[in-house]
Structure formats: C-alpha cells, structure tokens
Image 1: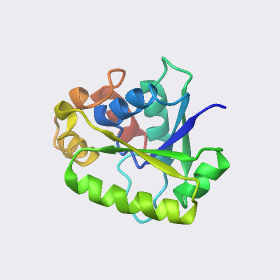
Image 2: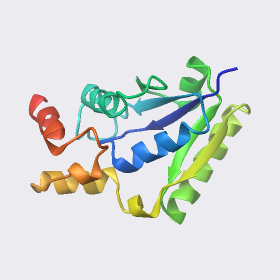
Image 3: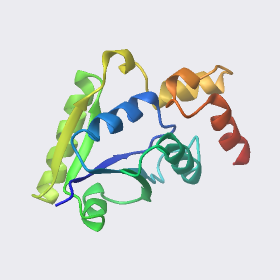
Image 4: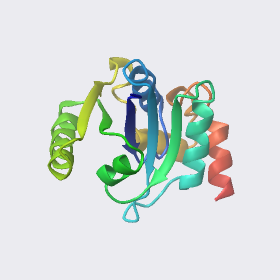
Length: 162
C-alpha cells in the first residue's frame, strides 16, 4: 500500500525550509501532497494559483510530490486524498507546542490521523514565510531563502501578475 502524506500550510511564500521538510519526508513516504490552504481570514501576499505554480516548479524533478489547494479542515482533505499522515515541520519549541495541540485536535476528529514532525535543520531555523515576505517587500533579494529552482524574479512575476 502506498504511503501518502499531506504537508498542509499557507506557504506564502514557499521557503527553503518547507522544501527541506518535503525532501526529507520523501525518505519516509512514497508520495507527499503539498496542500496549499485557502484561509479567507488571512491577507494573501501571493495568490493561491501563484503559490501552487511556484511549488510545482520547485519539485519539477520528482513525480512523488503533488500540489493541491484546499479549504476547510485538514482531516477532511486527508480523507479526500486517502491519506492518514500529516507532516509538520518544527523550527522552535513554540512551534512544537502549537503543532502538538493541532495534531491532537486532528486525531480527536479522526482517530486514523497520525502527525509526523520533522525538525528543520539548524541552518534553516530562522527562515519563515514572514521573514521572506518582509525582505522581499523591502527590496531585498530573497533567492537564498527560496528553493533552489526559484528566484526573487519568480516572486516578482507573481506579485506583478496579481
């Protein structure tokens, strides 16, 4: 049976830290679905379509990663894609406390759900979508904080297209 994991998030934008979690997750799972969450409460930096395009570009080298938008509960999305595994990346102790609570809530809603935590490498611990957005919006080059296949120009094209 194929082991399919779901990696949910807003990924606004997708960073080198996110990419690391997925690539390391591929050592554990047959396939990973990156689930780009639609959150009407959050103000988007990049459109959902743009985030999906950028993430797909980052993983052009593998057919074991797919990218899909979703809204609503992550456990409902997992049911739709026939997965009972959620991957979450952890950068800090604060991340753990929050993610533990979310993981327990997901399991309470669907007892088949398992949450797997992958620790971010120390070299990426400080990288967050918020930091990347702030650097970009202040004219900085964010290429070193993005997956290898992406550049500041890729972000610029998305922002200008919106």
